[in-house]
Amino acid sequence: MNFFQGDAQFYCGVDLHTKAMYLCILDAGGRVVLHKNLPARPDAFLDAVAPFRQELVVGAECVFPWYWLADLCADEGIEFVLGHALYMKAIHGGKAKNDRIDSEKIVRILRGGTFPLAYVYPSSMRPTRDLLRRRTYLVRRRAEALTHIQNTNSQYNLPPFTKRIDRASNRVGVVDRFEDPSVRANIQIDLDMLDQYDRVIRQLELSLVRRARIDDPTTYHLLRTVTGIGKVLALIIMYEIHDIARFPRVQDFVSYCRLIKCDKESAGKKYGYSGTKIGNAHLKWAFSEATCLMMRDSAEAKKFVERRTKKHGKGKAMSILSARIGRAVYIILKRKVPFEPALFFAH
Image (cartoon, rainbow, N blue to C red):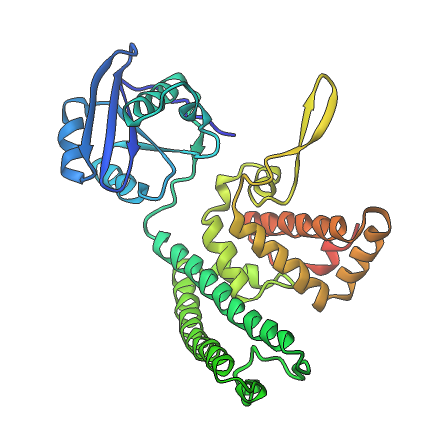
């Protein structure tokens, strides 16, 4: 966990919402100089902080409306720090809770040096990253439509499909399996949605690949050298990381990707694990997918997992391989070198 350690003449805590924001500004001595509820508009914010612009630090919790505030501070030359929402538990404690209290808690955490930092993703690549996350949403909705067709087929005890219906050419005649008109209409809805999802996702992936070759072609092509990482996984890993230099150690990177577990320990005794939900869920998914694809494409990866399955079980063995892929990606991006399978499986 990283904390804000800077010094400033004024500290501003913002409890940010969609239509309103509560500002609390402290001076260097910890005295409240402004405590006010304002509309969530750039002009209102700038007018409020205008008397305190000299050496001002603005802190806000990482909730969904933070984009515009971070970009506004960057344009105006105001230092902005983003608080990690899961770590900022101090603002949720106490007997009473409202926007006024929360804004003062945020600024006192900021001034006290215990403000947990989240990464302020740069505005130039942020829309593309959000578009990639939207693609993931669409793919999962597509999978739900496929699952509904399979489940309906099982409900009526019909023979299993002989071909994969995720391919459009294999979906001909699926509706004819069912006799009831309502069931046929239900399945036709799924098929129509699948056709639309296929078209939208295909166009989306083409535009994302073109964008990646403009934003950071070197990183994109280095990731493609890793066995099991194709164009989509390379895009997700690249845009979720942005800059590998923000992770000083490989341990920090694999922890951010949720590829390792942290021990809970007290008085020399271990009580299990913690923090399994802290980190980047998109990178966790990407490396899990890369693990399965590497096992499919590499005989060495299969042997690697088989050897560890005997000692740890299948799930733990695949987790070990996922963490190993994460470390390999960190080294590849740090050193700007392609993936070497012989070196990866050497030990």
